[in-house]
Length: 506
Ligand code: NAD
Image (cartoon, rainbow, N blue to C red; front, side, top):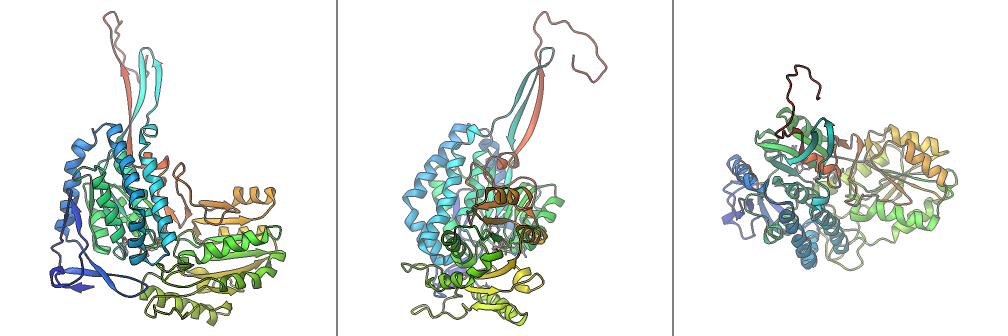
């Protein structure tokens, strides 16, 4: 982090978005946005001041007065335009995302596309934000509900999906009639800002969408701000738990989608080729930096004999800059992340796991400064080892053997995390038992990364989620609205009146 003014520097600065204007921060605290494949400084991002955060919230508060009354169709049409603009700018968005985040260009397009699906869903908000009505609950009395927007809502997002996760948040919040303050990851805020530019171009009025930058201090300021009514957070369990508690103290609605340690179970009757390919893709794609990655695989019975083939497939993956064609995995987000992952590999060796494939220090010609770690596989992994207990968030796959499906399920249910899981089998009965008894939010059956499409909502069990309602999908309509229940009676000329001191409706 630097204590310097942005004007001194030769690289572009990331702007704040306040009341419809992209403005230069007046902070003295800046952080470099670094290309993880080259270490080139792409931009400097400000750590916004308290006054700037207050100004963003004030703009959102002011905009809410008219936005909440803007007709549903007018709100929804903005998201129809936004989805078109995102499609038209897909290549540019993906290139920006790869430059600052590191993932491959096709995977960057996937990141944008999974967010685009939520924008499409936001355009259908009229079908979703419907109340209920019961006719004649008493004589001449109807009861109905209004789902009204809350006011100013805020979103805090992680580095690993800088397009998809901001798009999980602001489109649904705004389409339901709220105004929004977004705090993107300070590690890769540029593609998020480009999406916000497109959102303004699509017609989001000034103050309805605002962006502030920063880290811990900015997040705490949002948690504490009395005018913010709800916070949606996606990131690590440690930070999410803090956000949940701190923001709840000021009466906010909070939803936190958090860390993971996803296990796959492979039964010996699984389709071997499909299963091994699925596991390799899910363990090592995006260099393992997905909350729905599969860093732990439990091989049941005879499937334990598949280790050499799994390792052979992992060896074929190409580690390179995300911009290079045919790259399978790009760099980790930062030098610090690379060092952390390498240190965890060291611990795995020291704690007695068998290193089947060592991805440390891969040769990447032309990108010698990149934060690369290649596919790494351990077998003989057990609970109690750091590589099992800690979310590595890198391309490190831990293999565990089990004799039965029950043993595998007991291990998964004993893990503190419950984000995603998958079973590979041709047995419907085994898959159904797994689906019934596993305590994990997202369950894949022969699907390695079962991230729900926006007809549904993302979820999570145990340490992977706090808050009742999920992001996007139908659930988020309830998160971003307050239910108001109206009980109404209208008198006509000849209605008979009578005094009633009881609670009953007559
Ligand atoms: P992170 O928790 O470090 O950061 C998330 C956000 O919190 C960022 O905006 C960051 O600026 C802010 N932050 C960081 N430290 C803070 C602190 N001490 N106090 C207050 N705010 C702070 O997460 P990350 O490293 O950016 O992302 C990776 C993590 O996110 C992994 O744990 C991954 O599993 C999780 N994740 C979860 C989901 C999900 O849907 N469950 C999706 C994506 C990522």
